[in-house]
Length: 430
Image 1: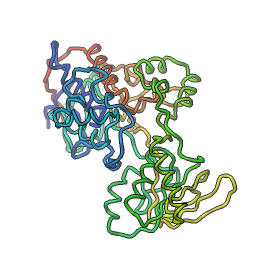
Image 2 (image 1 turned 135 degrees about the vertical axis):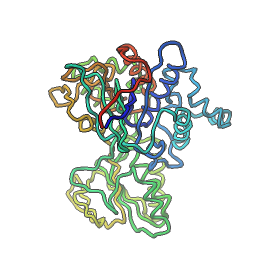
Image 3 (image 1 turned 90 degrees about the vertical axis):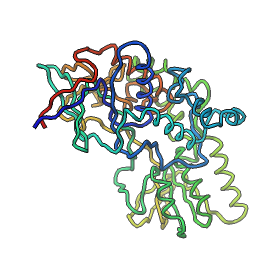
Image 4 (image 1 turned 180 degrees about the vertical axis):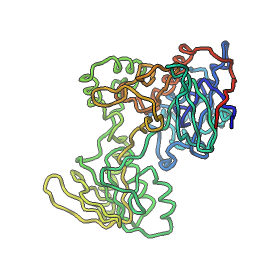
């Protein structure tokens, strides 16, 4: 049996903020002069969503609103956050607010607003299950992208933007009482109306602090125990000079540096993003701890310089002091791990394709975010995320998204081999 398979210049795997920004860049490119670039994106979620489980009402963004989906690439874009505010009737209110950092729920609404404008190029509720190369002689000319609904798309280029995966420590298994903070709001909704006695929150970063604060607010009779290896929550380094690590020029500098320099830069500037907390939230949590000591009812307890050495599926947590070795056993209704995320590994999805790696086994990535392959490829496989070791700390962050998608699109346009007219279909046996 044969079926027509549409051929696109780009097939995007995933449709989070990065590939949404790419879809916008494509729309703006195609609106101008020149040959259009055809594209379609596949997203396994039923609708656009970005860390919905952590859309806490009071949480703010940690990047300026100017680092939206487009402004760093095209300040005149109709897809900007400011245009969203104008459309929502809140532009004057936002200006009067005198704040660079919108509420996280507001920025998510902005993403949804932008995604609705380009929904003709995305299919939701469809997961990519396999990618197979299509050869022209010894060269890979196309990629056949097979989807969970049985459909298939043929791509000259792939752009993989499958986001991050919640990370739990080795030996920890998620369950009814053990969960990652990415599920926070869904789990809290299920617990409303119950009377939990104690929560344990593991982690020292922004998410851990936000989880501790929210649980402390939402359950006023419940003890919240925060466990982390540091003496206290460390402030994020958002100073003007340190923030240059997120500048577009910093990507070039990082990419061209030797491995020892890259390692040092990551150590120097890790506090701009990792295991660091906004100072206002640190101050608020300290005020709560102090107030409760004054009142004689300590409901927010900090187990600092400590680690959980045993966690059972029933929620029993053994906390050990790193300095004395003393252990405390806590019976918890839920143990929340705010232990970060890891990039999704694209290679299982890409099947028989072979890629070059460095001495540490990490994927080699070209400056234009193309995977370096062991076989000739006419187009390219581009990564949106998972390139921190080659491109620096902005790999999975919003700070450089608008610029990155412009670079990826320009690379595809520059490398394009016009072999078929736009909208052509291939005949594939299925």
